[in-house]
Structures are given as C-alpha cells and as structure tokens.
Length: 329
Image 1 (cartoon, rainbow, N blue to C red):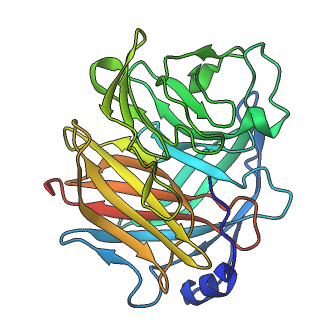
Image 2: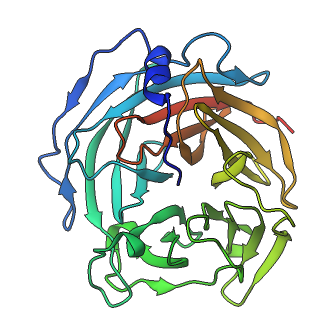
Image 3: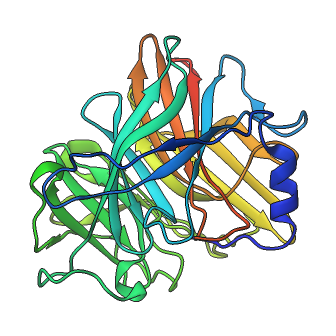
C-alpha cells in the first residue's frame, strides 16, 4: 500500500476518458446472508493521452472503468482482486479489513463496462471478533486455493489466514504457513497466488518470492541485499497464469511528486520476470495498481488490474481489462 501525493489529482484529470458520465449502480436488493449491499457509480475510462500506456505486441485493451465512491463508502482502498464463479464473479479485499464481492459487466464484444451486485462484510480476528483496528485489518493480498478456500494476507501484523470457502466463511480463520522473513511494517506479502502442488506462492513488496506448503515455505528468489523501495518496480499483485505454467504479476513504481507507473509481467516457476506486457504511466491512465486477476477468455487470457485509492480524493479506484495472447514468453 502506498498513498500517492503531489500533483496526482491534476494529472489524473488529464488522463480521464472523454466520457465522464457516471452510471449509478444502486445497492443489490438481495445481498447474500452475512453481507451488506453497497452503492457505487461507474464511469468509463480509456488508456488516456498518447505517450502513456504501452502494450506489447498482441496485447489489447478490453475496456476500463472508474468505480466512483462517496467519502463514507466501505469500498475504498481495494487492495487485491481474484475471480470466482467463472469469468464474471470477483472478490476483493480492502486495507481496512473488509471483504468485497460483485460481478463484472461485459458488453457483447466482451469488453468491461461496469460492475454490479457490490456487497461487503467485515473480516474477523482469530477469536471470531470483527476486525476493528487498522493495524489488524491492513489486508493486502488474497487467493483462492486449489480446494476453494479464501486466503488473505495482512501487513503491519504480518500473517496469512485461511477464511474457508467464500460462500461459507469461517468466523475463526486458520493461520497458514507464511515465509520466515522479517517484513517491514508497511511492506508485507503484497502478492499471493495459488501455487504448485496445492500450495501457494508469496511475494514480498520489498523483494523475495516463496513457494509455500502447510509444512514449510521454500525460497524461490531471496530478498535482495538492498531491498526494493517505492522508487523501484515492486510486485504488488500476482495471479496464476491460466494459459500454463507461471504467474502474471503487477508491479508499481512511485517517485515523488508525480511519477506513477505500473508494469504487468509474466513470472516463471523459478521467479524470473519476463518482458513488460503492459506499461501504464502519465500522461495516460494510471494510479496505485495493486490487484490482478487472470482468466481464460475465449482464445486469450483476460487480465484485470485494480487500483487502491487509499480513500484519498487525489486517487481513483480503476479497473482495467486487457487481453493477452496465450503465447508470450
């Protein structure tokens, strides 16, 4: 998580799509048991002004939206994204300790046009009590395991917890194996994904990648001698590549006052990062991208990127879609 300051608001206005109409999505009248419906607006966005976004050969932009929220909305600060229930359902998590779910809206061409059915619920502590304090609720990553369980990673009080199936969440989460690493207070397990052998892969924001099983975590790439900082491209989200071996990761860079960039890259099983597939920067559409989800979509891989607005008026909650060719390594 990083809060972007400086001239971000002014530059973001330059990168807005020509279409500024906000479509109001009223709260779903029938939220799931234990969940609370939430209202939001959406507005279409494109990739912004020329010179910003750069897409590798064969990569196509497949639509984008800004999720427009009022100041008191519980949907601010979305930190990760994973798809559930096929290609349209999604689950997200906030760094205030809320779980969020909804459905993606696609047009006839399969392009992203909106979201619906937004609802949320508070995550719980090990004793089953709802999370209250920010230090307990700073959730940064999530994954859906091979068995269908929902794992959430937290920073500040670094831990990886299993909340069970999304449709039958446990009140008392189970603690799961996490890397034996000395994570800084605000630089924790940002990228987590289902991994090999029924396990899970974890990446640290300041470097390091691990493959974990219930018994132990194995180092894939060690934390560098000089840990990565905000001024470096750091992994902030990760998902399994549905086209085959490896993962898709989003990286973020921030250099004050207003150099904000995101990269999407493929990661091999041994932790090697491939060429940049998507680059987002000013004067194009960009923000604090932390969430990534990938799914097969016809003969391509559909990739969704989600930004964390940190509940700041200078940032936006953006959801962008890209189609990647199945062979790109």
